[in-house]
Length: 373
Image (cartoon, rainbow, N blue to C red; front, side, top):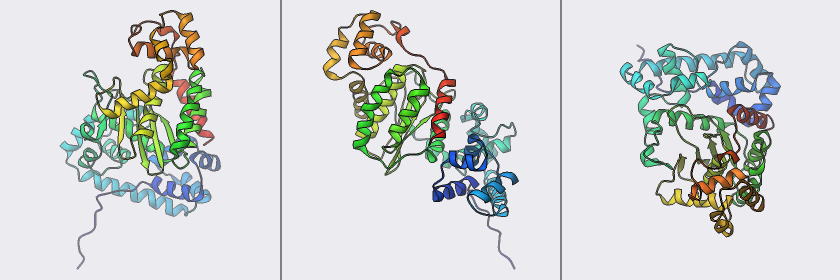
């Protein structure tokens, strides 16, 4: 007489094994893509579970990182069986309620999950994306933002739990295979001041690769992730491990003043607030000690304290602002942003001095910098 068969209530993606073998062999995603001839996006999809491991990929993995073709095909089949078992164990009403919380359309359009309208496959794709076995596990991991996450927020800040979780998760997934040396706070403080000089660089294709490299050398992986509808986050930061930090930046307003303030704000969290908290930041400073300190840190980097009185006395004239920006070594747009922050000028004044970017520029610069990591 045989006992009942074991039905696991968990799953493991083939990409988890691929990533382990890549790390063992010292291969970056870019290096694996070059060796296999696969596109960079295909490697990422393989690692995060959004792309299936087919016969062609199995053959290439066998050649370049080990394991037989049969092993990789069996690995994919086992993953699909386990994911099916896990999804079938979820009450349909609970599944539908959970899926309604998520920005499914945006997740499909951006390739974060499979582009399908089939409810069963959407559920499985979402479980795999968040690496959870059921909605309760997802809620325990992402659903306590009120107590575990700090916001620069206001009454108009309306990041929904699902959209914010999807954005954070995408950053986590990208950070898993982003290059970074071990954390070095002293070196990172020096890198912050060097990054300040990049604020005068106009083209993201020039400053994004340099910024990423500066931070990676100090143990900080920089990720650029566009927010889905419903998520109004500007940045997030936390330590992925004791010797490695991550920073997610959304380029939300696509202007130089907002981007650089967000970067230095998140940098402030990393150097000031230890390794045990996750910070998610939006529009307006909340009245918490950590947020006030991070705001002060960012403001002090951009406009040195001994030049603050000079900033506060500036007039709303292009010539005056440009000259001051040159003297302190930042872009005119940053000066305008700080003048608006201190209410020296109104929010609609002098915005023509701010540099504007597009997501096409950000994406191209980000992908270019990844090819060298």
